[in-house]
Length: 198
Image 1: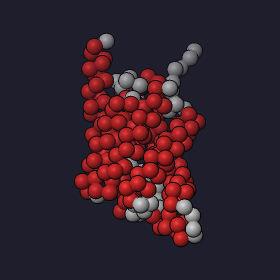
Image 2: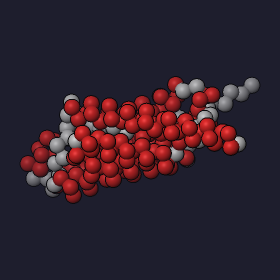
Image 3: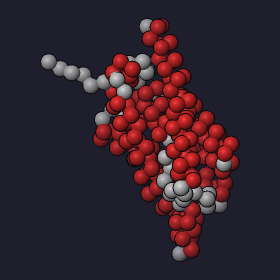
């Protein structure tokens, strides 16, 4: 049993930097292209689904801090990353990533967490306009007379839903592509192995 735990720890340790790289590529791609959706959490969702809450939170926070070195406006969003990592770890523990329909529900729940936390950070730290791809939409809503929090929340509920559903499905299909033998080396890997009967 100890050998399996050490192999699992090694696999998680090796997965975290790969996941951070995936996150950074997704984050920089959306930033450079000024897309209104965020694809910077695919690696976090992957780690959370395979390894649980603590590795997911570590991956999320490190990704955010590293992206913050390239663009300091990312740093306040570490709060969002923390809660997304926590959420995916808990959802994976409850077997909410092992079927496509469960992954869809998980994506919606993660989007809700991201919406609430991102709205708070955007309003509190940036006065409602953070400079991302959704900033122009928020500015347009503000120009129509909508309240600040309502404008930010209205935009983020849509953009986070789309972005987190895409990210969740990408993570789900990556897991489905991993061999059963490799999955068994992760703490939650056995949750994704389809049992063959008869």
